[in-house]
Amino acid sequence: MEKRATFSSTTIGLIFIAPMLLLIFVFFYWPSGQALYWAFTLEQPWGGGNQWVGLQNFQQLLSDPVYWNSITRSLVFGLASTAIAMGVALVLALFTDRELRFHRAYRSIFVWPYAIAAPALGLAFRFILAPEAGLLSVLNSVWPNIWNPALDGKDAMIAVIIAFSWKYIGYNFIFFLSALAAIPRSLIEAAAMDGAGPARRVADIQLPLLTPTLFFLLVINITESFQDSFGIVDIMTQGGPARATELMVYKIYFDGFKGLDYSGAAAQSIILMGLVVLLTIVQFRFIERRVHYK
Amino acid sequence: MVERTPLFDAICQAILLIGLLVALLPFAIVIIAATHDIRTVNIVPMPLMPGHDLMANLHEAWVRADLGSKLFNSILFATSVAAGKVILSAMAAFSIVYFRFPGRSLLFWAIFITLMLPLEVRIVPTYAVAANALAPFQAILDLTGITWLVRTVSGLQVTLQWGLLNSYPGLVLPLVATATGTFLYRQFFLTIPDELAEAAKMDGSGPVRFFFDMLLPLSRPNMIALFTIMFVWAWNQYLWPLLVTTDPKFGIAVTQLKLLIPSEFGLPDWNVAMAGTLIIMAPPLVVVILMQRWFVRGLISTEK
Image (cartoon, rainbow over the protein chains, first blue to last red):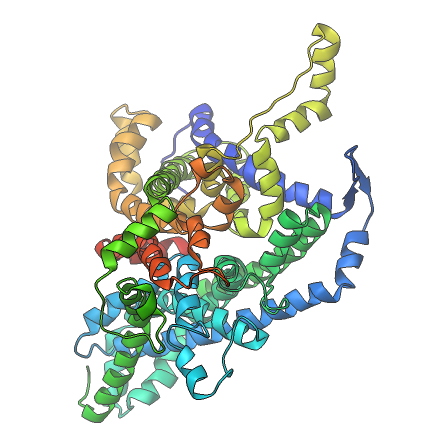
């Protein structure tokens, strides 16, 4: 879409866009290029420039079981928390959209969890799910040692998934509810006149019309599970026990800033960037299709 | 609703109530735990009747995590990020929509692409740039031979150095450098009728005047929505502030949470930890509750 009435002064136009361009050049394009350069080179131990090593960093990474472990953990975490956060949010949004009593209260309260910082809810859930205090410790007093996220990798993974899903239920709920509100009421009423019950209407009208939102949220949730999980993991488990919750961004942070292995961390960043870009491209293609559909 | 289904309605209400309980439970636990003393908070299960030590715990957490100055930094940081976003993206969108200079669509795509890679994903190289924000320009000067030229002509060595680690600009600038807000404004500017710009031009107004006197007042709702979500987003940032601010003087509240985790072999003073959590999570929550309409609106229009 183009404007008919525009201003002709190129100088003023460039002045207006310059600050933004300067910022993204310094803090986006340059670092991204830098990451590419590092990924294919190796830093000399005592300074003195980088040495070109080709794909060696990637080969090393991809033959490292610890790295594959972090990919698998990230996928398990991403898929499980996305499924929970989206599933629960969809049910809550569908029911809230029926405008029963108190629906205004539901509409505002279900958004609250999204306002909480990931590390803050990480600390809250660390207490709630702690093995010796809080809420879930009740399980341990009935069946000793059944729940211990500090020692059992599976429990730790469950704990971070619960914390993350709790926050993103709020996020998904906002989008589902606004998409549901955009469905014309007359459509629902016509279907009801034809004898379609609530379940039928969800399956045949609301869900099909929600598919663009579903798909959009699927991509966003998975990308967020890569980034926003850092605070939760860092506060709740620090990647442990025994790397059971070492997600990709956490491993990049750990290798790059604690292990000072810039080349390895850069190669990991490149792989993660590729993954995120791939997801985003899929999403853009789908958004284009939605525009045609309308 | 369209028909009477009392039984189904009751089931809906029951499920929504369970949802409400799940949504509110963590808030409730944090608040209740913050009112207990250290002995009560460690009883299994934790008593759900509030205790009397709320003020003492808040005070202890406040002192231990130095929350006075940290909250101040957080407010400064989140406000700057949000304001920077609101201003810079309005300007960039104005340039993209209302001017017709060569390479405009290229610039548009250059900004658009930044949406793809969030800061967390490119954290290592961004950190390196923050150590010297002028490094890119130094490299350009070196590559184009200007450094060499200056040295041979005047004998001076050109070294550009502007370290951003442990500084407010270092906290703020990298977080402003994304396209989120630009598209919100772009979509909005495109809906403004052409006649407005035509009329302004006919009355002799230049682009700067048009921007300040017409576009900005018209986009006030967008600015509020964008400011609200960017404030909450910036307040909740963790990884970047953790890396950039090793000097406690510039630390923000959220990264202080780490100090409050009870250590494995120390006192399990979860009451203080929860009191700290309560203080740190409160500001964005208050913003979301008070500005709910703007928050929801901003979220939906920036992400799509």
